[in-house]
Amino acid sequence: MLKILLVEDNNTDAHLTQDILADWSLEQFDVTHVSRLSEALAHLARGRFDAILLDLSLPDGYGLSTLGQMQATNPTTPIIVLSGFSDQTLAIQAVQYGAQDYLVKGQGQPELLARSIRYAIERKRAEERLTYLAQYDQLTGLVNRTLFRDRLIHAMARSKRLQQPMGLMLLDLDGFKSVNDTLGHEAGDNVLKAAANRLKECVREVDTVARMGGDEFTIILEGLAHEDDITRIAERISSSLAEPFQLGSREATIGVSIGITIYPTDDHEIDELLSHADAAMYRAKQRGGNSFQFHIPNSPPSSALFSNPS
Image (cartoon, rainbow, N blue to C red; front, side, top):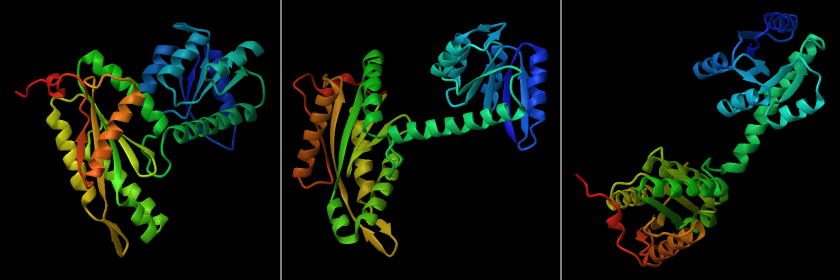
């Protein structure tokens, strides 16, 4: 059964829509009817609906702004506009604002409305899938390079606004090539997935772990109180990834080299920040790997940006 939220202030139109859906025998619909936009938003805040049937003329909302508010607060729920006007221009604008379809009230057989709801749900799922593929790494499920850069931009802005230092880590797995060479690429993929899970376990939920490609990862650490916080996390990561990875009857052992820079002590744009973290990571690798190094900018010591622990 599909849960439908019908947002319609005209009771006659609402009953007509409910009767049309009740006449459709191939699928059952559980319809919740509200007459105001505020009521709709309250229902959506309390529970999940499979689709929304939305009238654009409500007592507390009119026109495309009604659709805009609904879309902004519930971007994952498909919306079908039900209008009293057969207006091609408005229909196109509604789709551009995020609606999955635009139907004229009372027109068409039950099949048309039921099919529109089902297609809207499937289109929304496909849209979310494409968004996921564009922003997340398919192998590990981590944030990918594109979404990482977007999150880093916002993290840098928050760091300056809140005057809270932000740590940026660049990590490269030591000895990973030998896993691929000796155990095969499937084993290498399993190590990458397991390494990704260990990295997430080493940081907080508010932090971002991303896969940049190959065996290279990045981590954004926000809301830090002291430089020692970064050191402890780096040590935790090094210890975690040094533990053997069980691959069936075999096991693989790797390490990790970590380069770290602190913003805004290192007050540069994204690419230069990444370059500094990368240089620090290579220094760690040149010292034998399975260790971490901080980038030291030509500015006051990074510890000056942290408050003294109480």
